[in-house]
Length: 63
Image (cartoon, rainbow, N blue to C red):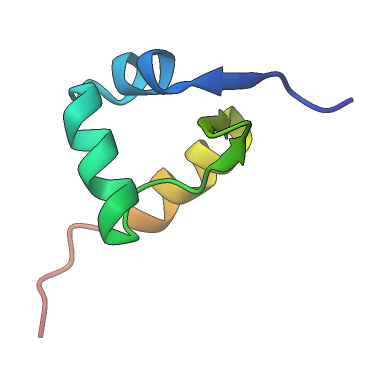
């Protein structure tokens, strides 16, 4: 089963960032992966969660 698509407002709330931050990330090619349907950005929550997991760092010192 494919998870439902979420809009920018919902993902911004989920990530606790503003919609304008999400828009800037899209323009810069950063941020979570999205689909553009009819000119509107939509997000799959599993793709957003995978993107977040890729950002995680452990507590080991960088070196």
